[in-house]
Image (cartoon, rainbow, N blue to C red; front, top):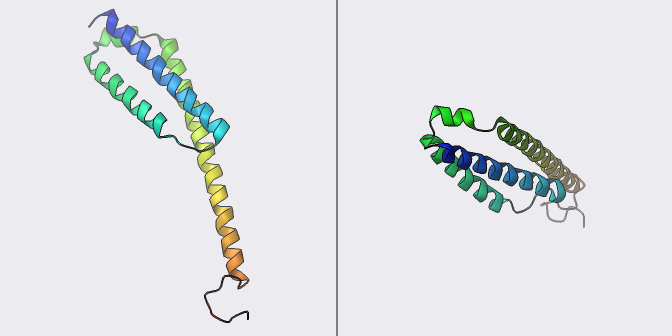
Length: 118
C-alpha cells in the first residue's frame, strides 16, 4: 500500500469528522431525536477505517496529515460535549417529570386507596 493508502485514510478521517460534526449540529439544534442513522454511518466509517488501518504500514500512518487528525480530535471532543449536554438535559427533564408524578401522588389525587377522597 503506497500513498493511495494515505489518501484513503485521510478521506475516511474527513468523512468521520463530517459525520461527527453533522451529528453534533443535529443534537445542538434538535436536542435528542432519531440518531440511529448517525450511529450506522459512524459504525460503517469506523469499520472501514479499522480495516484500512490494518493494511497501512508504519511510514504511511506517519504520513497522514496531522491537521486532519487534529480536526478529527476536535470533532470528537465537540461531539462528546454535545452528547453530554443532551444526556444532562434528558436527565433533568426525567427528574422533573418524576418529581411531578411523585408530588401528584403525595396529595392523594392518584392514590390507589379506594374512597380516600370521596
